[in-house]
Image: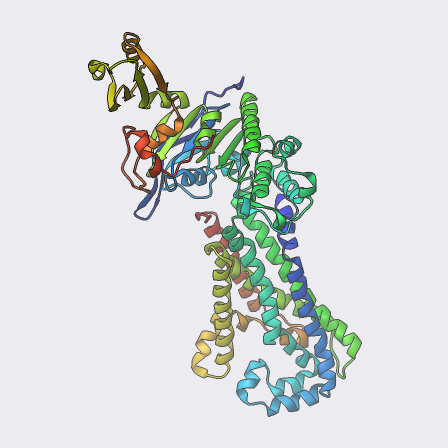
Length: 272
Length: 330
């Protein structure tokens, strides 16, 4: 009960910003069916993709051939790998994870709970639960926005509505991994700014390893080190597939980050 | 005084030490705070007071030694140690987006005990109910301090740990607050407080521990400490000052100006009074012993931080006043 109460407080604080980011994610995905419709459906998009140089094709994490085969679902899945979508979602997760642990240590607010008969484990568990809530919210907001966009725009092409579930799960796993790693950083740092800097650097590094590995063969061995190489919403939205390897890897990265953060937090000296 | 006293002290530290690399912030602190007492914890900035309080609250971990509250180790059994405890958080620690009343309600729920003392505290501290409905962002420093005190006391804990509790309170409210402390003490509550305000400590505490350079340099009742202090007497004689004044035991002559003599004495006053009774004394000024003087003597011109040398209470307090961080407000 205490953990739930603390989680509710953490979520209420900064709720406006969180809701704005969730709405941003939903609106971004809502717009995609309209864009697909305006481009003339999958055929039109395939033509546009073919005209792009390979470097930009890699940036979209898709190939023209894939769009040709996968149709509308293939195109719409690009909305879940778009840098803007990932940036909005990461901002929500990193912001929450950094603010509620390192930020509270920085301000001294964490004393409010820790001067009561509440353990550090409970304090940390409230943050983990909060990250899960934010991640679930993000995982729902994107597909929900896109489903609404589909209903409103009714673009040419077919899409299996049931495949939104594995898509949401794929995004949830990615967000859990990002959230877990953020918690690890937040438990180790003592200021919000430092956590945001670490998390941003790590995510940019992961993204560019994944990006350049598709362009430069010599980087391929590094690709498994990026969490984005275990994130494939295209497979989920086109085929309804969510590889077990992806589930396990992202799930364990998130769990490892969160557990590592707990190990650090319960042992460390708190600032202020 | 409280009626029921535990045999074990409420707070007990044994060789409590905190080091940051080469720097010793606190060394070998031995404390035993009895139940039903107001216990002062004194020292200038950097002496180790806040480090000790943070160790007691489990905010930082001891490098060696141990600290126990209600018999529970504060690190290994922190939840049990804090079960019946009120701690004064820094006023800036509150959530700025919450109203005062929401903050108090939230903290009462986290404490798991009803806020039975809240109304009394709000009255004593003169924190209006209207103010409680405002968000904390609009509070002055003094209002935040009052809110922090209310949050610490409202669930009527058996032990209160207070770091500079009257900082930011005006003198009238401070007196009311001290009255509240004494009342809680009389009902068996234990109060452990650090303060720079020595007059407040003198008015409220029965016993004090003094730290300097991270080490305990004195642990005594307030009255006992004052008895240790070298005091000054100014005597104006009706005729010439007697030449054998310096022979009185434990008396030192500081200055002579005609018939007026300034003396310093330590310990028992009676030998001096007996000597003066045999002479024509026109005026006698004997300043009451003040805790401030004791502390000035302890700290003297020493402003050393962690790792500084231990001090001895042998410095003339009047020479040391300007050298200390400690303040006296009457």
